[in-house]
Figure (cartoon, rainbow, N blue to C red):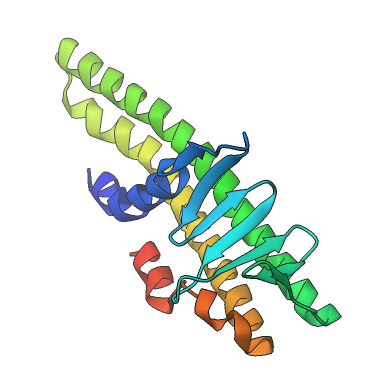
Length: 179
């Protein structure tokens, strides 16, 4: 069961990321929290700053701070587009892992019951660990995506200091994800 235990932190993080805060907004758009304080709504990434301000990044790399469009250089726009793409990928993969996680839980319960009913409890661990290894790899892939998002965040902050209040992903978050 070691693989199951080593999976717990990344798996818990991914489930929380993927399923934590889906809500129906009044304008019928879906608002999904990706990583606090980040959410996705109407095909844009919304970030809450350390000072209560907010930023929005569109798929085309447009950036607004507190509702005011920011003029970006082509390089800054490209970084902003990467940031958006990484956030969307994390969200999509997180949702997929969340759905697969529910199926995995059901299969695990079935495997346990089957192993106990057949009088072969020793087979349970091997079967569950094999399935858990798939999730562990997917969790590590999500950690890689988080690292990519942090890199884009750092690049955007370096090229546009006004983005600094929205740089919420710490290096320790990436390290914690992988442990």
